[in-house]
Amino acid sequence: MLTVIEIYQLLPKTNCKICGDSTCMAFAVSLLGRRKKLVECTPILEENFKKQKEKLDSLLLPSAGASETGMIVHPELCTGCGNCVVACPVDVANDPHGAGMGCAPTNDRVIFKVVEGKVIASNVQECRRFGKNKVLCYACIDPCPTGAIEFA
Amino acid sequence: MLTCTGCSLLCEDIEAIIEDNKIKGTKNACRRGAARIKGCANRLVPSIDQKPSDVESSIKKAAELLRNAKSPMIFGFDNSSCEAQVQGIQFAQKIHAVIDDTSSFCQGLLMEIILQKKLKTCSLDDIRNKADVLVYWGSDAQDSHPRHLSRFSYFPRGESRQRGYEEDRLAIAIDVRESNTAKICKKHFYRINPKGDREFILALMEALSGKAPVNDAKNMLELAGVLKKAQFGAIFVGIGLMYSIKNDFEILTKLANMLPKFSIMPMVGHYNMRGLNEALFKETGYVNRVKFDEKGVQDNKYALIEALKNKSIDALVVVGSDPVLSLPRSVLSHLSSIPVICIDPCQTFTSKISSVNIPCAATGVESAGSAVRMDGKVITLKKIIENNYRSDEDVIKQLMGAI
Image (cartoon, rainbow over all chains, first blue to last red; front, side):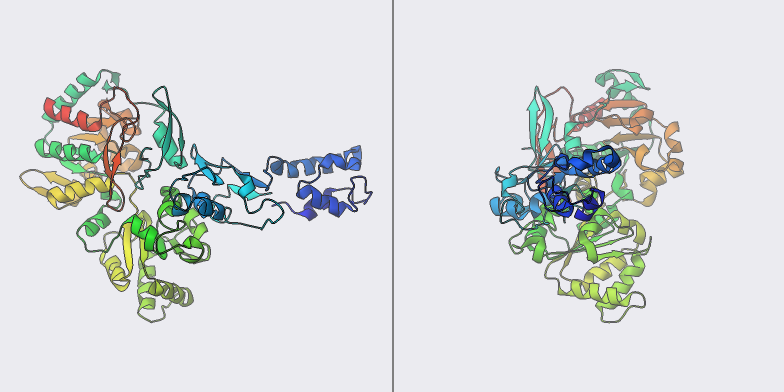
């Protein structure tokens, strides 16, 4: 998983404040949290930082398609076993007699569903990682042995 | 809703999206099930000596080949409905054939002991509702039966296990490699050497009786402690354990006797292997490799591998199975010198070397019936697609009539 330090090491480290953050480290935190975009750092667009920018682009690319909670589902790794569907505490609370018991979800309030043999995530606003009172929940990552779900 | 025939869990909660009498998509099925429900890319076409023909002439030719055979064998039926299996047994009785299936080199012996009620077993619903300690021994349920852990064993909440896997259940994996199931079991994964199961069982039995085993005493005593504390346990016996302890089942029954709260569940592969085992057991008292003459006889020499090695069969009917894919090349040479009749919905490696190919409907999608789940529960299979393919039951009936 990408870390703040990895991003910081590739930034200009001049603390120029052009991006609006007080230091390059703070900008790295904003980048990782997807609150800011790399283009907001104008010095890195210069020619002498070309290699570092390319590296940063490739590092930040996987999280570009992440949902608001940062969840990324890799369909090519998913086997459709449904462990995440049953393990997710939100799914259990919203559908105790369906997903909670290991059966197919019986309503649309669940986060995970298996379609075409692969899991898809919806209702991200229900996720425990969403909003102001978010918690660092790992309930869907832990039961996935193939690593098909991760949080950016 | 339809029933998935991808593995012996027979998931009944699958939704299929049908457009123009074709399956366009599935919901709730795992990747394996989804592929199975969508059907095969290459349908089997009727052929005689690998030249295209029609179903009627193929059946006629198959009947002629079987009439001339002195010791034919019928192999397969693990991917057929229970109704087709009953027809298959009647067919074998009529033509005095040997009937065998993949269980003779898979879970057959364990199934026989379970059907003889020498080992305690339970249903998958019991496991969901009551089980607190789950042991995956030589089986990688996560890959072989993808929804096993999420639907029945580890993750779901059950009647007496309301807090599910987080607090109420413990999963243990015993395997030679870190399988996907072992990754879920995390620190409760016990890696053993290949063919080290017997040694592991002996050490575990020592630990269970209170002695410290010579090797790895700390881990073994810890495992024994967990097993002893279990209120309702289940051991999922996979093919890894079966092949490792070979035919010595006494050691497994001894271990089972030391664990009275544990049930044994065979991790059956094909979706209706248990169905054929049960039907044959009811009819003859044996679960597989039965020769029908005056009375049913069961002996190792009647199993497909032994029959091919000893060249003791002169015709082979393969129904919904692919021995050319699953058996080693060294035993297959005899197949080139005998007529092979293949009845299957899809093209297989076996169909490519067969003398006669007869296509049939895919059970659970194009034809209805019933099947037996790995725990013995009978599940109904529905027909959701209308087409002209005959079910394997009808093909066998017609073949019987032609003979």
